Image (tube, rainbow, N blue to C red; front, side, top):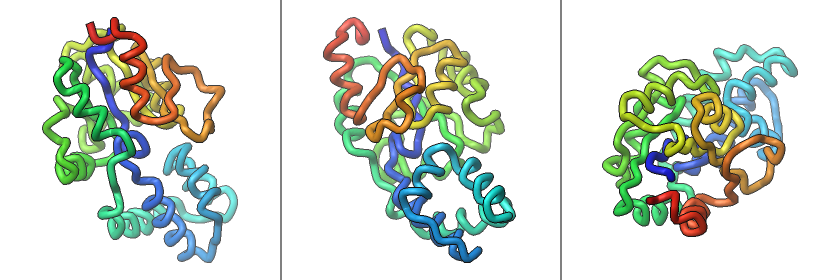
Length: 213
C-alpha cells in the first residue's frame, strides 16, 4: 500500500521540456551548432549533464560555458513552465486519501516557486532541492534522507519520474518506482509501475485499492 509519493520535477510534475529545448537550441546557436528539437529533447531526457557532455564530445564545447548560457536562456522562459497534464487532477483526487507528497529535484528553490505559482506548494509535505547538497540521482542519498526524516516505509513509498535515473534512485533506496514514459523511450528500464500519463497513477490505485488502505 502506497502512503508516500516522491515526485521528480521536470517532465513529471512540470512540463518544462519545451522551454528547456528552446533554451538549449538558443545556447547551442551561440556556438554555431544547430540541432533539431527532437535530438535536443532526446539528449535532455537523459539529463542536462548528459546533453552537455555529448556536445563537448562532438563539438568541443566548453560544458561550463554551455551550462551558463543555457541557464540564462532558460530563465527567460520560466513563464512557459506549466503543470504536466493530469497533475492537477491527481493531486486533488489524492488530497483526501492520506497520501503524502514530496519533491525530489536537481533544481534549486525555483522548483518550489513554480509549484507555489501553480497553487500546489502546500500539497507537498517536504522535499529536496539542489541547495541541500545531496548527490544527484540515481544516488539514493536524497531519497533516503526524505524517508528517514518523514518516517516513510520503503514498501509504502513510490518514486515517480520520467527518466531512468528517477526509477533507479527508487530502486537504490529500496522503494517502489513509477516511470512516466509516454513516448516509450525507456522500455527496457526496470520499474514497479510504467505510466503513459500522470493520470494513470489514479487508475493504478483504482485497480489496486489495497494501495490506499
